[in-house]
Image (cartoon, rainbow, N blue to C red; front, side, top):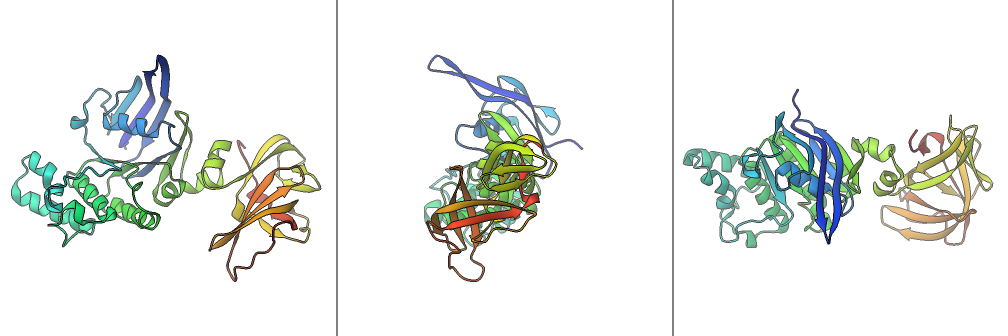
Amino acid sequence: MTSAIELEDVVKEYHAHGELVRAVKGVSLDIEEGEFFSLLGPSGCGKTTTMRMIAGFEAPSKGLVKLHGQDVTNVPPNKRDVNMVFQSYALFPHMSVWDNVAFGLKQRKTPQEEIRRRVGDILEIVDLVGREKRRPREMSGGQQQRVALARALVNRPRALLLDEPLGALDLKLRQAMQIELKRIQREVGITFVYVTHDQSEALTMSDRIAVMNDGLVEQLGGPREIYERPATPFVAGFIGTSNLLTGTARAGELKIGDGRVLVPGQDGEVTVTVRPEKITIGTDEPEAGLSALAGTVSEVVYLGTYNSYAVRLVDGAEMTVFQQNAHDATATAERGDSVWLSWQAQHSYVIGS
């Protein structure tokens, strides 16, 4: 089956202040038809530049861009069967919702009856029926975002590119819109390529995620794979919160002070990551068969659904532990308490293994 989007060793270089800058350093991706695919990474990692090359707003310095098997590397944006939604929405303020959504169809001289049908159908999908006559200024940020989505989708592109479209929304609305975006994508069934720096956003919506750093893809995989089995220390630290431990393993055990980190099958220098929610905090020394480290609580933060503990180990390293408030909000330990941290052997993931 032909992929929706293919990037083959794409490079983007430009000159700034007399120096050559490589914004994208050789990215290869294969995005499937109907997939919700996210480009995730910090500011300046090359994710937006990569998307702009897919859209045709930037020409790659090297490499190929293919849409549905066709080489479009040198094809202008208006000749590519993709649409793009920006963070700013770029709605026409003097036009109604209906006219904003119908604009592209009118430009293409689509028959009036088809315009009525297609605009009506897409407004139902994005839950804007009854608001057709409103102007953008009369709508909330979330509603404006739906109008921008409807305007892009009504043209029936084979792929939709979204550049941080939820960035201007407040947290609660952004979280609600994440669920809505995924629902809309499933309903219309087209390929979505989504650029974001928000890890939880990417984990919530994506079928697959490309984690980018310094112009390169550090890991490509499903949300669970990237979270549970990060390929590099950068991915481990960027996706959620992670504890990194390094040292020399002998016979499947990494010694730290009087404690141990179980890494079955490992021998030699290792970097281990363990997620804060996998760790149990208590005052009693754990039983054999568990990873166990001693330390002192340096900070306790109440975060509603869970407590976050910062625990300083005997070697000076600091561990983060999340404890869910399942029964009550009473902290297990307070600042200054001596504690033991423990977790099961399978929750120590050796990076690069």
